[in-house]
Amino acid sequence: MISVATGHKGSNVREVSPEAFTQRLAQYFENNKVLSAPKWADLVKTGCLNQMPPNFQNWWYIRSAAVCRQVYLHPNTSVTELRNRFGSKKHYGTKPCHFCQCSGKVLRTILQQLEQAGYIQKNDEGRSITPRGQ
Image (spheres, rainbow, N blue to C red):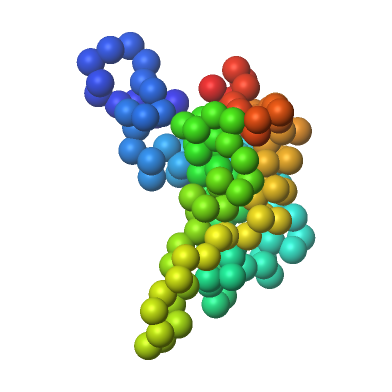
């Protein structure tokens, strides 16, 4: 649990720094073997906007924690909304930059793993957090 001096008992995800929350949740996922990175995770890019795949070992768990946080903050979210949230500008050198979405396969695989773990549930409107995920 992440401790924050908020003046009341307990803390909310919105009150905690996103970086600190994501790092702690990623450590929890990795240490407790809640999720597992697929075999192709070290070869894949996280979107068409990147030239190279991530170069740190636990990027899968960090992205999973960030996805879990986004689903918590924005209930009934879809894969397209998550692709837009994790997207960025693609640089074309001297040409103007354009927005690109991130990889959908990575997000769908993470969401499926979080559903199997019981942290996220799929509704008609999209995906939302479960009581266990809270």
